[in-house]
Length: 306
Image (cartoon, rainbow, N blue to C red; front, side, top):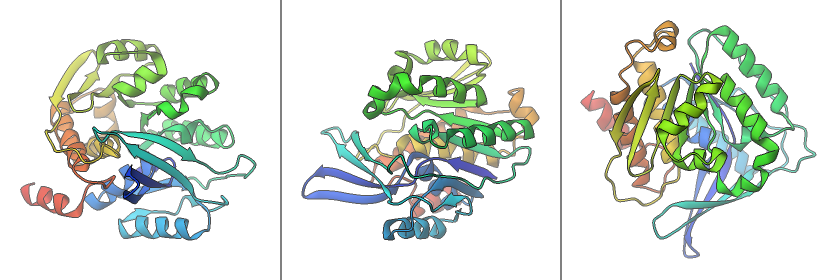
């Protein structure tokens, strides 16, 4: 089972005022949608309201085979993310979030050894409900889940970095895998290369770093070994969801390789170059559309090849 923990929002994607798209969004939600479409058993842990937008988001998750049993509907309004695409179709964001005085609580699942958990973004830094997430991650780690952390730290949140940096470090300490972009680690720690990032993260006992470099390549640093795969060449329409779909590629590969927790912990039998290649392919496919997740025709073609 794969569990994703993160925000559930509406993305309003703006190229110009006559070219606007609306998509279900949120980094971990995007990953969950791709996994659901791929046939992976996945559940999204999040919160929503009871407004029309939230009902449509829930319906979208159901249609894409994502379990919603652990989505709380106690917020007042659906959160929005305005994503402005520049001339290179990269996004800058403005977020409109729930008021802080609304109490959010979660009903967490029972975790089994070998389950996968993906968590991250600013969602998992929110002090209003962070204690419950931390408690859940602690239980999951003790049960033998494989935990993947994606900080996904946007420039829009740089002004808040000093207030949440300790939370980010605590999150790192839960992780078996850290998946981060060059932009994430530059924003967070002023780190500019994958090797530098891996050396830095070893103080938090991180054995596996997946480091993405946009249109250049992705790298895996595992027990002092380094693997790399070039990014897919695509005509980019929007980079929104590319990193999230990369994460889906990693999790899909690990689930399909039927990796045992012991093999993973000891870095045995993991074909990291193949995983990076597939994850890059997934990320490139998303960049070729306004969708934040893999499309059904791509998935059908993938399964025909496999």
